[in-house]
Length: 246
Image (tube, rainbow, N blue to C red; front, top):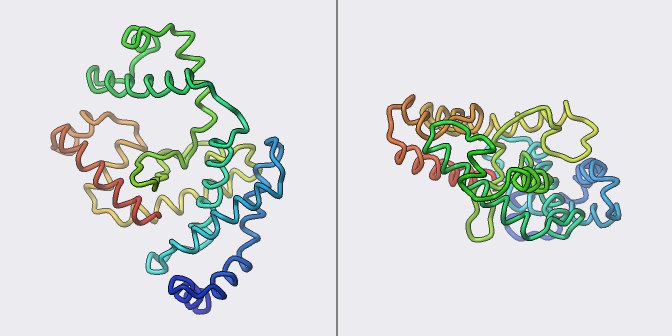
């Protein structure tokens, strides 16, 4: 660990040799993650090279003071880089109309949740948007491909907060995941590390919003806050978590 911390410090100070050594020492992580993206219609070597970019970003942004294992930090960064490549470069291309409908549905859902105090049904979404239920289902299914445990929930100046907002039995958001139990453990470790940096009220707010799927109104009532205060606090907390994760 001492050698690793020393190399990280040297790499952050601009030492290319130290950075190259860290990359070489952790290529196994890239190979392990890249294997999970086999059979996606993309050359393995290309996926590996994209994963190496994620590894280098992880090295550049890793903070040893967080007391977080580097592999726990790097694996989501590597996987996120590959997923962004597949999403943006196009293993599965979603039409602009479906993408736009997906965005409209997301906005309408949030509006209805705040208005009704509960999750809206398909018919309610259809009435709100003027879009047929069949088209709503199609848009949701088409956009599901890019949803993951590392889906961006906050973005500024080109940086994304890949907050792991829910943990389920879906292989940690990875496609064709071969080791769901291992991924679940890694995901939970990252979440615990991030939530451990919040105070009790902030942590409870995030738990209510992102783990219990509670509305801002419900969260405000439980925490003795207004809906506006919950909204503002949530944005500030997500920003801080982004800075700590990235």
